[in-house]
Length: 123
Image (cartoon, rainbow, N blue to C red):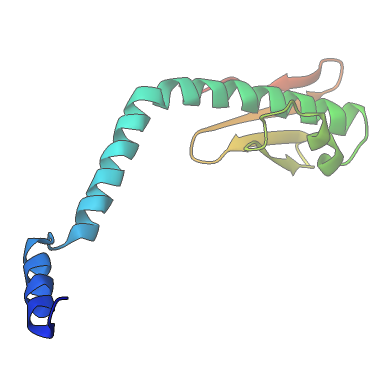
């Protein structure tokens, strides 16, 4: 059975070998992992987000301006996996914008005789 003196000595010994600022190492490690992930998968994610926003804008614009439905019900027409696409409407311009925050955005505008047309992508 360990005495109080031996226990205190063991605790001091453990504290001496515990790295100081351990949380900083975890934060730096997490940032490194996030940076590597963004470098590795950033381009494919951005490309998929551009396709999803273009599809979402065009589909929601057609639903809204040709189908006459409200924007909330148009989101129900999206494919599974498009939960990150958010919609907004400009009623005066008869356009719908789809966004994946911080990644991609696309706008489709209703034009008489042409239907809903995507605005050109800016690179």
